[in-house]
Length: 472
Picture 1 (cartoon, rainbow, N blue to C red):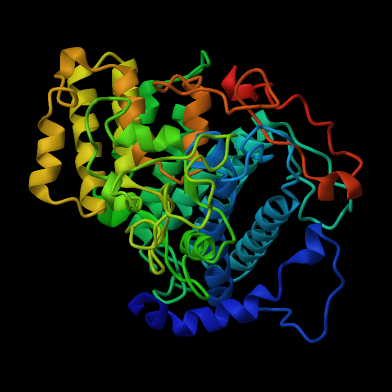
Picture 2: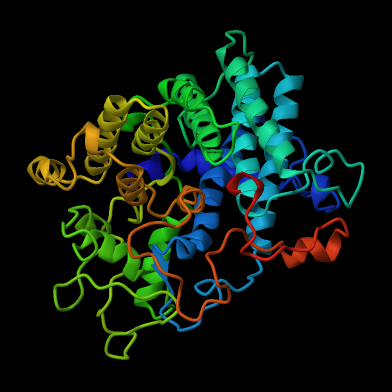
């Protein structure tokens, strides 16, 4: 609980500034004279960094089913089986955060606070990518300027280019030394006011984006590697948010599950990926992610099938998200981007560039970093890495092995769905959910009903099997 107490003051500021919501921009809520209309930059920073962390978890709570980290205990669950689901709450949360970020940027410009402008650009780019990677085209250029209540939808290609521009601009702003208002440790809930770490995060986001277009002729592995080089240097650099009103939202899922509000059941696909069923080698991270069943085994839930144990959802005969895990405990941080993920982006880009030695070194470093993050004992970690199925040598490294290991690293991250689509879901033994609505794997989510009901510019949702522009 130390972090929660440490940031008690910051959270008070969050509570005050959350009431703003910046809804006068995109959501057309009239100004309330009882609310603070001109919050200080430090309160805006607390709000925006807090929302950025929560939004990373919020979107992953849906996509975790698509990449089969999670499965519903109820047969035929809509998310589990690729039905259209209404993500109005997620869409609105992302846009509310973007509106606050835009307000912080404008205030930062007015007050000569270049540090805040830089951080705002980086967080805006992150949220734009959440939109582009899940829905495609979306409002942006008209979303926050009060000129219309029905903003047009910009093309996802343009939003992608804008996000890259914002990252570059954010780096430039943070490299300036004349910010009139410095970032304060207690108000920055992601990097504690550390400007070099924000610059590394901007490059980490840039590496993700440049690697995302691996299917396109424009893909440039050299540019990806340059961004990686300028990103995280160790686990200590990871972008994380660990300030919660009560607890980490993943831990809340786990606690709710014990109270028969069922959720957070691990998919058979993911569990078999780790327990030796699929690859013939037990991954020691399994026990740092979940707890065994009542029989001491690790059994996942098949997607689309529901509970397959003793027909009693109250018996721990399948495994779930765990509050004992370093990733999903009550005070565990929500991971937004990590050093281990960067090493796998490096491994893939170096492999595609023909640099097998660099690719292999990054592949092993990524496994090591992730196991260290999860607290796997050194001897156990080394035994796994030294197994011939893992330490295959640079000449025998494949993209399949890189994606296999990265799948574990991105557990409960929405980036995993980006990877699954780029990889065309070619993970070993990865099958469609039972009774899936589609005949092929899902590629996008439906535009939310809340948006389409109030904005006539909302496009009709294509088939959920239709790839987004970068996935073709």
